[in-house]
Image (cartoon, rainbow, N blue to C red; front, side):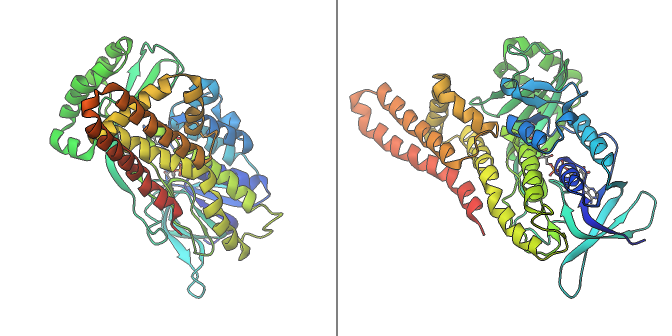
Length: 435
Ligand SMILES: Cc1cc2nc3c(=O)[nH]c(=O)nc-3n(C[C@H](O)[C@H](O)[C@H](O)COP(=O)(O)OP(=O)(O)OC[C@H]3O[C@@H](n4cnc5c(N)ncnc54)[C@H](O)[C@@H]3O)c2cc1C
């Protein structure tokens, strides 16, 4: 069977659904291919930052937050929920739109025109069926973090230094219900947020080398009991102990991958398939939704009447650079925050303490970093401003604590601190500047 659509979207996850919906609203015919339409049961994508909620409104998909017990989080503007319920709502919204066909099938390979090299569709297989070819003017590869179709088109491979290990706590007594918690500065970063009225997710970052030493799931449970339980608020500890004893313990790699500019005609790669950052700041869905909004703008019928037009490739160049406006800050922030808080470098430990004191000093220090994390302020220069202000604040704080005799050593330590601060943002900055 062969078909011709304006767009073929591989993957009905966050970005695939959002893009398919936006294209359909613009009058395009869209085929969405998803390998499983069952409700997803994953420990990823459960906290949607305020910037992501704003993008959902822009995409006219905010109603997908209804009916899933989405808990207001982050100053009551972000939302946390069961990922699978949210994605099921997105899929239902997309499949009900005129012009969209949602097909349960696995994309096996992308089809290319031998002469031009352009991607012209995908070979897909339904359960128990034989492979069929589907053709479209534009193929959107939105198959997420574990994409096995992107390798030909991406310069980099995903790398993961750690995994998030997740448990679900029942009736956890959170000191501030409806707020998301990040527990930093006590070894493994820990995230905690309600995903329904009674359930609270806890995610614990365990570096790969630590897991190699632990070796078994039982040892991971012991590690969480001994190392993590004392770091969470006392009122939460009974629920966490219970979850360790009888809850489902699951893990996901914390992958990161810089984005590559797509130069293949007929192809677009948004969301996790093209770019990932450590999930410590919960930014992935926000970036994926903003990708969808930007693509809808760049490829709108007013600019690009036909998605078969070569103009699409020019717009892809714009897409690569314009998405930096909202992806660079979360990418750099997530990598820098993670490296800062897992570091055992004495200079960076001083900066960890400085960071915590800095944000505790009040609204004037806390507000803008929270907006940057929440995807509401995207300007990387504001991120660098706060990052280096914290480095200088940490140095000043350290110098105030020491006796005069130790001043030369402290000054030397300060130089090291500043150097280490530059080192942890350097790599993510150079990743962002890659052509
Ligand atoms: C541990 C962890 C926690 C996270 N927590 C958060 C968080 O709290 N907040 C946040 O914003 N982000 C979080 N993220 C990141 C977030 O999950 C992703 O950024 C987001 O899901 C990316 O959306 P996507 O559409 O690109 O990919 P996905 O949502 O993964 O969608 C990909 C879709 O493609 C389908 N698919 C794959 N291959 C094929 C194929 N060959 N054929 C057909 N279909 C296919 C899959 O079934 C899936 O439905 C987390 C990530 C991790 C690892």
